[in-house]
Length: 242
Image 1 (cartoon, rainbow, N blue to C red):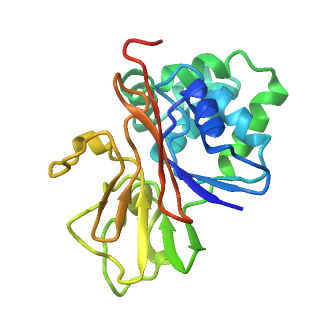
Image 2 (spheres, rainbow, N blue to C red):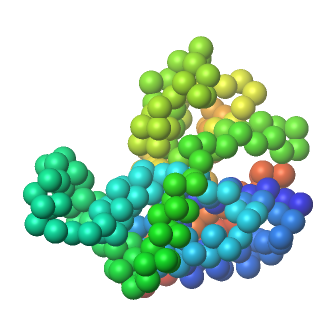
Image 3 (tube, helix red, strand yellow):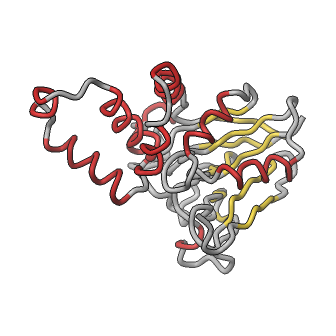
């Protein structure tokens, strides 16, 4: 049995399948998906449906799942003049921001092709994503969380952090949060980490491991790490693919 963590897939279904093949992923293995499965890429719903069939895949919520859940719930409700009139301006702004600027249009497009039962299954599944996971592998302790530890204090227990702290905050790689626990995060593409001498590859510093390698961007990569031995795996995204 091996334990893997994979970064932000963002609807890149074909890359996801290639990665599973590269890992020779077996039923006895475990895979933790560290958020942002949906949006941006062409097939976010197909990725969700694939992992719904895989009991040894443990999804962790990302900010894009939160945006998608709000947006898809609205799309799945009965839309009338009264319901539209009752929408709060903040909710409407969030929906527009999600679709126009955060890649939500790809998720909406596939969601609309589903029948009523399939839509409910997707919504129910998104609600099952965990806020974080604590994993012990090979004598090492890991905290798996999408974003970071917002409002960090060394005296706070992990359960004292809010969902916003864990999902929306970008990790602070200059701070070592724990002496004996390694924090594994996505959310921040490693191409955007300023002191990273290998942008687009897994980044390690101060008991942090950052694994969002920009799978949804031209020239980016889908990344995974095997916690048993730290080996890194990559699937390259071809430039200009749809």
